[in-house]
Length: 594
Image (cartoon, rainbow, N blue to C red):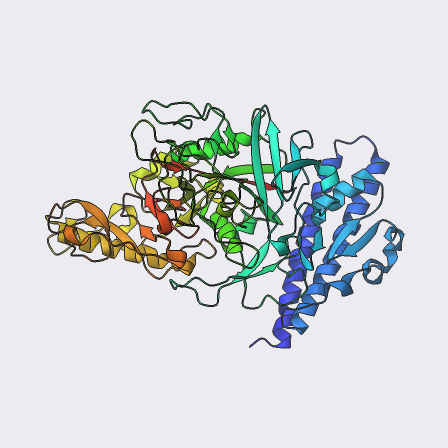
């Protein structure tokens, strides 16, 4: 139990940390001004920067004190107008600064000062729409020449808004009514639609079960861990997708559809459409085109990052980062759609198994929720903007994220750190000797395997037989089940990724011990082929599959042929090499610290 003395010590430590941050910011300001030839203006800017940092420190301390007194809750409204109360000698800023939702807002006309406040505080305002408070879409730093906000009408027809106007307008989103914010970026013809996921904390009443339940969501203010409505978040987990490296995010922009390429009709060297295993094409994120598949995990990361190149969809890497989606970012979308603010999406069944015509298209639904394997041209295929088509989104309407159930299996930038040589399929300058380099770990979710699986181990029996040379199918299955069970149990330490929290078991990839001896997904160590396989499921009957030691990479969502087994909570592990049904999705984050 916390005592008042403990609370004081905690606040003192936070004060010290904030003071150190202020000193670092000031030092950076001094360094930056060395390149400016106007010493008077330099001094004014440095003073203003120092004052804003001091005010922000006092507001943070106020909030922390209130939280310590009220079990994590505080009244945001009581912070409004406290600039002069805390820093009495700084009343000259009363006409330029105010406090809204616990954050300093610049209301003057000096663009340099506005930039300083944006850098120090983060220009992401909390808005109230439909009685719900959350972070408005972060449009700061996105280039106005390539970015437009999207407003959808009741007939699912889109209209554009300049982002400068959209920043002051809330008519294009309403999360209380499952209307998520959409934008697109379009540079050199490479168009990409994005959906805003505001920063939030979540609570699952009964984690680690197979029974789906509504996930509780509390939206947070700015980049803080404080609820936008001032209530307590005790018992809630701040979703880890909103921490990128050491940077706290007000939200993330997620690709609205599975990635497609700048040449989606291209037939690759093995006869499949979409783009193939190359980094010579640009990523697009648009509906009703063939998704980009047959590409390695390493090249997925590379082409995602290329979206900020001069030829890419955004066209700049200034305060913007685009990368291959991770499990926790997938989970951030999945958890929001499993709350009152979203809907479970229908499967995208567009595709077939015919060699040479393996065609999967983005943004489709079937005639029923769990439809599967509808070939190109089938009458029941429904485009993204039709009555049935919108049900394939995470909101049940056109504003949500599509293709998260069915379509292609989506590789994520997530791997089991087991030393498998197949981690090498992710090589893109970020991975060396089957390990993610330290400087690139923010781009990957890295999972710890069971002790036995590390670095390709896994022995069975006193004779030293290994997973790869044991003499019969039953002994191999014993090893495989043991390995995957230990790895799956380690998933418990990862929060927000829609794996352990939304399932209570898994299937492993093994061999039948009788009949044909073929490989299949199993739960038992002894399984006759005549009895078929066993697919473990989690929430919404979505498959929960964990591959053996040579399958270190994750794929999510299921593919077009999985029926009810596909969904936002479905997962599998694969080798990371090219696959005719293996696609991907990028994520865009923006901020002054990137």
